[in-house]
Every structure is written in C-alpha cells, then in structure tokens.
Image (cartoon, rainbow, N blue to C red; front, side, top):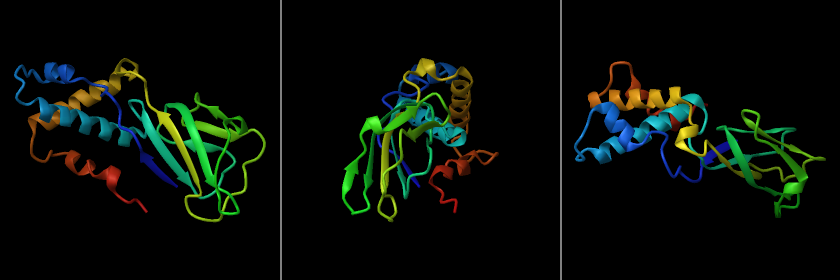
Length: 178
C-alpha cells in the first residue's frame, strides 16, 4: 500500500494573522518564517493524528482489492477515480456506479456494489484518487488549531532543537517504518 498527497491544501487551518497574534508579533519581516512554521505545525499534526486537516488530493495504491477499501487521512470528501490494471495487463477505470463511497466513516470506505474486478498480480495494480480534509479553516476543530498555535509558538521561541525531541519528530512522516 502506498499513500501520497497529490495536491497541497489551498489554505492552512491557522492563518498568518492568527499566528502573529498568538506570537505577539506586529512586524512583517518574519512573515515567511512564521508561514513555514504554520505549515510545519500542520504537517506534524496531520502525521500525529493520521488525518488531513485541510482539503487536498490523495492517491492510495493497492496490490489487490480488499473486501472494503479504507481511505486513510479522514475526513473523506470524495473519490475522484479508481483505476486498475486488469488480469490481462490493460489499464482500466472502474465506473463510479460499480462502488459505494461511505464518507461518514472514519476512515472513509469504498465498497463494491457487486464484486471487485480481477487485477493483475503486480504491485500497485490499483490506484485510488480522492480528496480528504476539512473544507475550510473554520471546520477544523478548535483544539487542533490551538495545538498548532502552541507548536508554532514553541518553534518560534526555540529556534534551536527543542528539549522534548519535537525536532526529531518532524522527521517521522518521512521515516520508513518497516
């Protein structure tokens, strides 16, 4: 199974103005750095929560169809497409009428209405493109946004390595866990 973000969110859950107010910063000379800290706080929160905070595109690849496909990084918004390599080796697009999308479960699920088609016995034979994350910053739960502000504040105040190992945790999304 492989999961990749295909489009980054158009906005962040915490705005630059909110972060600057939290940090008590009035000048604009550090706006770029504070913006980077917001992105770092969001991506760290997403990794720790295993959920997408703001709406963006994702691609999940699978070797075979399971009975039910669970789509990581809720909340699920929509499934754009399910492509697969059939048993003859040809690329196919599964019609949306062949499956049901359950966006209310966390993680969201996709189930076949009849049976999944046969796929070639190869890695990443199935590619599911979908959108996940809250639509607006106002939809993101306030405790998550507050955590982000605290993380931004901690990174801003301590521009060197933090004592609790926070800096090391920034690498976790990129670690191979196998």
